Image (tube, rainbow, N blue to C red; front, side):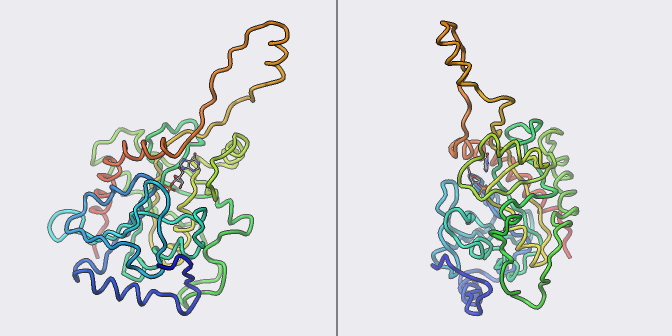
Amino acid sequence: MSSTSDPSDPTEPFASTLDVLARILPPHLLNPRVGIVCGSGLSTLAASLREVVEVPYSALEGFGKSTVAGHKSALAFGLVGEGAGVPVVVQLGRFHAYEGHPIKAVVYPIRLMAKLGVQNLIIASATGALNPDLAVGTIVTIHDHLAIPNMTGWLNPLFGPLTSSDHTRFLPLSDAYSVKLRRLAFHAAHALGLPDDALAEGTYAWVSGPTYETPAEGRFLRAAGADVVGMSTVPEVVAAREEGLEVLVLALVTNAVVIPERYRSIKEEVKAELEGRKVETPPEPVVNHEEVLTVGRLKAELMKSLVARIIEMIPRD
Ligand SMILES: O=P(O)(O)O[C@@H]1C[C@H](O)[C@@H](CO)O1
Ligand code: HPA
């Protein structure tokens, strides 16, 4: 339905969305404890759910349409684990500001999850590696972020009037990434017998996209301390923290950001050509979304097992 929802607007359709869900879902799925956001190529994270009910975004007011390949326009509700299981809600396709969604619509599903009772949020994202030690396929547990658009006064989902008396005007983010959930991620990796280098730690740089980084931008972000770069995640983290959720971000490295040590010199090449010398110019790698989706698919099973194991390890109150 609407992709222009604005939670600061008193007519914001949370009540209507919750009402639709209450009519569709069986009671034991209506109050999920864990929320999951699926990044590019990672919507198979919902494949381990039992008793799944999928609700298309078109049935939910306040939801836009995911327009990016590898994202599905639906929420999935279901259970993780044996026995009674843990009720969870999965956002099978996320919204990005670069698709034209207003930033408040990007985070609408997160706020809805909080209203449904979600306490822990696991965000899975596709990212490019800036840190040369991070191989493609590594899963990086994020411990900090650089919100480049926010630093220049743009795209902060908290701009505007406070939407609840529970919210604070100046939200601290030094503790944005839950130590409890990051610890569980490493315990889960150990329990699954993953090799040490399967799971790493690092800082996520958020850029608006949809252009991939130039070499100079990649170099800049790396020099600023970022390990991976992506076009999502941070607005969701910010809104989730405002809603009081514990947040874990699992950033899958789908490609290496191209940061050449030196630029190819066309001046030198032409000079050599004119002097009759032969020059070898190796092709320069260029990232594309297909590559991102392929790595997402290759690692989907691993991500799914890891997320399921983490959820099973979250203490129940
Ligand atoms: O949705 P995520 O953040 O996982 O997707 C990444 C960022 C862009 O949307 C896209 C670029 O390939 O993949
Ligand atoms: O290289 C990248 N840059 C930005 N976002 C991304 N998402 C996947 N790979 C990348």
